[in-house]
Length: 257
Image (tube, rainbow, N blue to C red; front, top):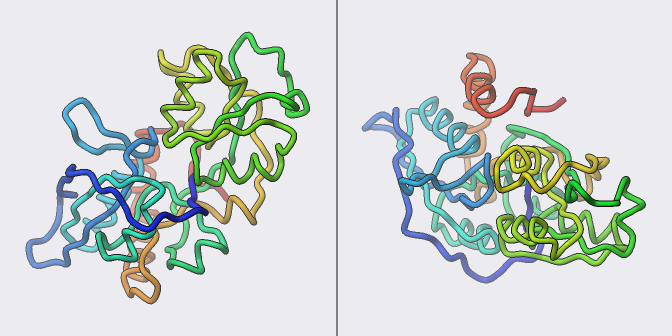
């Protein structure tokens, strides 16, 4: 899960969009912002379509609400300001629910909750968190993981990257010693050819002040869409659609406790 704590003045929106599908012609219409650089939660496939766990969940929620939903790809650093500027109606992008963010937006109930983790090269001599002291660790800028490293891994040299793809390139080429991100993101990456260089060192204890209560959908403060989405989240959890989507991407319970 990710969270921005250093907000920029504006969002850079890509021209990429698509319909959520299964929507009623006479239903509400919503635009959904997502940073599509965070597989397996959101990514752009070879055909230029935004896909991933978050996207499938959003489509299921839109279908449940009988709403027509369009997705736009947004830069992570500007994703909150763009919501506030009404560039879209909600953010579905693995965004952590934290007290700091709740000062700026409203959140639905969580739709998943997974801990942070650290990855290192397979041939690394680092065997535990203590071994990270003095090493360079990479993280995506303006995320809970960067904030976590700043607080709990203060004796490391933190290197920040605009996207997760960029820290992955640097750890695979030996330019950094480790990386911190969501355990699911790192686990899926190391299973791929691009991530064959590396392994999970360890998961990390959740710091609720930083990591929050899980990933939620962000809407503008006071927007009644929040309760519509909460009702839809409960419905897809109850009718089996959530599990169907979860099992497409993961072999464990991603919802958490």
